[in-house]
Length: 613
Image 1 (cartoon, rainbow, N blue to C red):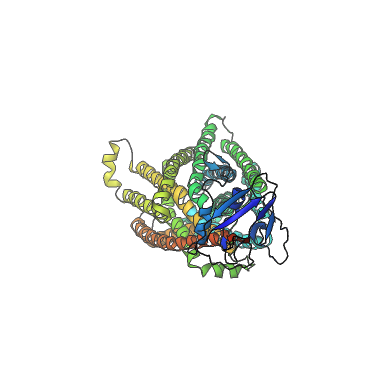
Image 2 (cartoon, rainbow, N blue to C red):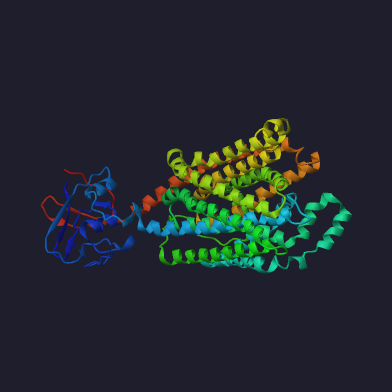
C-alpha cells in the first residue's frame, strides 16, 4: 500500500488508515515541509497533546503556500523508524551553525570552560608552589611537617567542608552554591598576602613552640611546627582545598552539568591544553618574583613583597573565574538529560554517605582517587626533603619550583595532544590505566636511585652531579610525568565517569569523592610514612617497604579502573537507549490511500504498519 502526505494552499491534510501510525523525527518533519514550531489544529476536539507541540488530529493549519506539494512514503510493517528516516531526503535537515567544524553552541560552552580552567590552574600553580615554600623553609620547620599537616589538619578540614557543602547543596541553587564556595577562597588569599603574612610575627606562638619542643623532644618537631607557623599551615590547607574544591567540585561539576558525553569525550582532554599553558606561564611568574628578591636592598623582606604581587594575581584570576561562570549561565542553554533519571532527593549527611558507600560505581571512583593520593604522596615527601637539602634558601627553593611547574606544563601540554587520540583509538578503559602504570614505573626508578645512589656516586661525579642532585632531578621527573598523566588522562577519565549518573549521585558523590577521598589518599600516604618512620627509625630505612606498598596500591588502582570501565560502558549504553526512546516518542498519523482512492485520517494510535499490497 502507498501512503502519502498532501500539502495544499494553507492546509496540510494527513488522512490515514487507522493502522498507519509511525514514529518520525519532529525536527526533520518541520524542515522537510517548512512547518512552524507550534502547529494549531483546525478542529482538535478529542485529540491529546504529545511532545514538543505536535497533536494528533485530522487537519493542521500551516503558512499559506502557492503550490501544491505531494510527498509519498512507503511504510512497511517491519521497520517504522527506518521507514520514517528513509522517507525524508538526506541533507534536507538544516545543519546547526558551525565555526571551524564545531557547532557554535558547543563553542559557547567549551571556550569559557577552557578559560575558567586556565585561570583556576594558574592560581593553583602559584598557590601550590607558595605553600611548599612557606611550610618547608620556615624557621623551625622542615619537610617532615607535611605528613602531619595532611593527616591532622588538611583531612579534618576537608571532611568539615564536605559536610557543609552537602548541606548547602540541599538548600542553595547551583549558581548560589558556586559563589558561596569560591568567594571565601578569594578573600582569604588576598588577606593572607596583605595582612596575615606581614603580621605573622605578632601572632605566631614561637616562644611557646620553643618551650614545648624543649620539653617534648625533637621527635615532635613536625606537630609543633604546625602550632609554630599556624597561619602558614592554614594557607597550605586552603591551597590544597583550592585544588580539591575549585578544580574538582566546582569546575568539573559545572562542566559535567553543561556538556554531553559526546562533547566531553572530544573536548575534556583539550581543556588541559589551555590549563597547561597556564602552568607554563604561572611557573615563569613564580620564578620571576622569586628572582626579584635578589635585587632588593638589605633589610627588605623580599618574600613579603613577592607574596603581595602573587596574591593580587590570584584575586584577579578568581574574579575572572566568577565572571566566566556568570556569562555561561546567562547566555548558554543547558543540555537536556534523560527524563528517566530519578529525581533529586534531600538526604541528611549520614544518609548521603551511606548511599554513596552502597554504590559499587562510587566505591570504584573513590578507589581511583584515594590510590592516586597515596601513590603520589609516598614519593613526594621524600623528594621534598631531598629538595630542601639541595636548595635550603626560600629563594632557591621557590625558583626551582617555578622551573618544575613550567616543565610540568610543557610535558602535560604534550600529553594532552596525545590524549584525544588515546581516547578515540583505545577508549576510556585504556586511558584510565595509563596513569597508574606511569606512576609505578617512575616511582620504581626514584626509589631505586635512593637505595643504590651511593654505589653510583663515583660514576655520577664524572658528569658533575651528586647523588643528592640526581635524586632531586629523578624525583622531579617522577612528579612531572605522574602529574602530566593525571591532568591529561586521569582527570578527564574520572570526570567523564560522573556524567551518566543521576543528579543526586553526581552532586553528592563528587563532594564526597573529590573533597574527602582526595585528602584521604594524601593523608593515607602520610600515615603510612609516619608508621614506617616510627617502625624503622627513618624515612631512608623504610624506603624498600614504601616501594612494596606502592606496588600493592597501584595494583588495586588498576583493578578498580577495570571494574569501573565495565560499569561506565553499561551506563553509557543505557543512557543512549533512553535518549533514543525519548527522541522517537512522538507519534503522528500519516495518510493512507484506501482501495477506492479516497484519503482519510484515522484516530487509532496503534503502531502496526500495513504493507504494500
